[in-house]
Length: 177
Image (tube, rainbow, N blue to C red; front, side):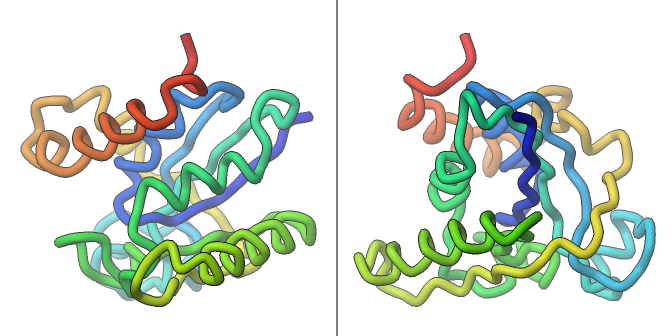
């Protein structure tokens, strides 16, 4: 069955690039979620006036990849202990967040976060927000497939590429052919 997940893990270029290669993922849309402004622009979101986070909307076939596996990638590709930032990207738009689409996603996300906390996977506390999905707005077209379309971009080379390479190494058996 086709499902959707909406996840914020820092810059949406990074997480989009990772999820696109995961078996069972049909499409990934960079966008904005969790704020109070309809159809925000990238500039507005970056100015932190909208309340939105940069997110990836992951459309997946749950007969090939489970929501739990989607979350496994989410926890792996970013640092969920950094409040309102990922590395040098700072601001509420870069917050770690899972916007759940239904009660089951909420339960799975909360259980996963509790398990990681109990196992003390990170020395610092996990600050990932788990909230109901109230809105989603696709980002401007130029953000879609940004890493694939701009591999020479300095940010892509220094931030996105290392995350994607690490992801591909760890999740090799779960990548599309």
